[in-house]
Image (cartoon, rainbow, N blue to C red; front, side, top):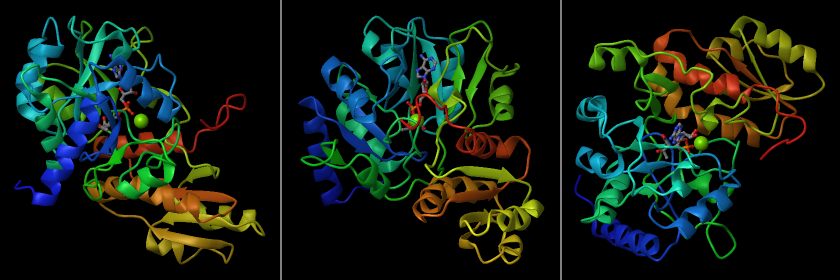
Length: 339
Ligand code: TXA
Ligand code: MG
């Protein structure tokens, strides 16, 4: 994509901030990331601090191209090259054995590292401009406070983390709304068998077809990802996920308390008056996913006592959406509460 002069200046400013150890929120096709120079331990520390994320949670490193993998992976699994050719740039993160160069501050002490090459034109331009002869990478967890809803617009980042001097990040690179809308698929290529660590837009079937072998579920001994925590991606308002036909009745049983509802139009029409905020859900998976987090943000901000969500269809294509919804509706751990 041709960048505008204005965007080129923004990229230059972002690179300068990253080089001086600052943190920059950047757009990807999945969600916004919170970036720092992966080689700079102090800068990476600022990312953990801004998110209030436990430092034992490993971060992923964003790269501009497949050629950079060999600078970060050692040994480089042949499957990584194959999958990069097929799915990069795109919503796939690969966990590979980490190279010497990759600091333990990135991986939370693990011997593997997650690598990703997003396709968003502005994000991608940033990774390219920053990379240089040493193939530098940018760490990038989702740009939200730990445990909260992931951001799919620059405004989400602004509201949650904010920009200095009053907020936490040095700059937000605004690339518009994210088109995929849920975090990347994560495949573990650092164990004997490829494992699917997180559902995303690249499905298990797509990975199996590319690799010509099964992609299994993680074993209990496999490294945990924060997206595997039961309660995650969660609104503050309690969320109930239910079959669509049950939604009007559940809403009625909550009266006089109010609720915000995400459901197909026909169901919204049958909801009682205490359903004071109503959002129509998309029928196709890509559209549903693209709007998922913006919808969760809106439902949460409606200020009702409850959120009711009609369960979307099942099936492989819907795994990423159903996975995020089940975590958004999971009971929150009582002791630690919201992070
Ligand atoms: O779509 C995405 O992947 C977004 C955008 C910004 O690129 N990033 C993202 O980052 O979702 P984060 O940190 O929120 O999720 C990455 C997940 C974490 O749950 C982390 O635990 C896991 O990847 N992860 C990172 N390195 C790992 C490793 N070496 N082994 C296992 N899991 C790892
Ligand atoms: Mg996250």
